[in-house]
Length: 126
Image (spheres, rainbow, N blue to C red):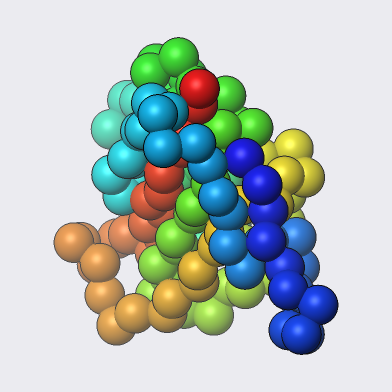
């Protein structure tokens, strides 16, 4: 994997990359949108709680597939209220400071009015 941040672009505002390359013969994992719901079915409280739980769920899918945070090349987060700084902190913690390509999107609603955060992504490994 190689992180791409062209010298002709502004430096990223946080720890992400403008692009990430990977070997074409790698195993690819596409992770569906993960929400802030705990294993017991309860929904975490507040945007930070849901973001932490959604990243925990994201990492659980990653691990179950035999991948590690270092394999993540793309993360997309959808939030229903402003939470950019919370996203940056949660991403840094969950991905141990790695810099995948990242997209942050604020939307009007998710699948349930109780859901404030949804995180999806991709990972590759040789």
